[in-house]
Image (cartoon, rainbow, N blue to C red; front, side, top):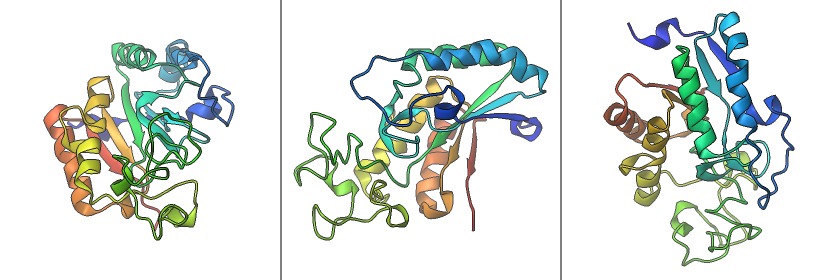
Length: 222
């Protein structure tokens, strides 16, 4: 039987759960707060939960849904190695892990858009020669661009772009596959109804290739 059919989830919204500041200090040292989940395992089991769904854990500038770097655990939470330790401890106690995948948009202060220059390499908002320029739709550059529901701090990504697809799910070390190797057992897709069907199919194929049995679910509000 698929493990998800009997899953009882414990939902952790990390920024609030660990009392992290809303705004990120991109120069600060990692806090390692995510390791507290290991101490909370007895409580999670006592509640009858056998799965943990993490809200956004990747580097972001504010609430977590404005991803700044898909390859790094937010320093307000800890490090990539901390995340692996947490997954190992949860798995040792029979608890699965599902991550939040926010792939419809990034943050305006992400390494990819970089509107305020937090990152040293030029983002799409700084240079049309940026490797990330074609990830976004400008009209005209750089003052106007597609954004999630018009929220300019959440520039929308063009999911049809091959380079973006490879980055998220196509490459061997894509975002989807990398974090499954680090310990995730599935993905929850933010605003899945706003992602192209073949984009979701690509994610499903990457999951099947990397970790058969891992689960994929989507958020649909409408």
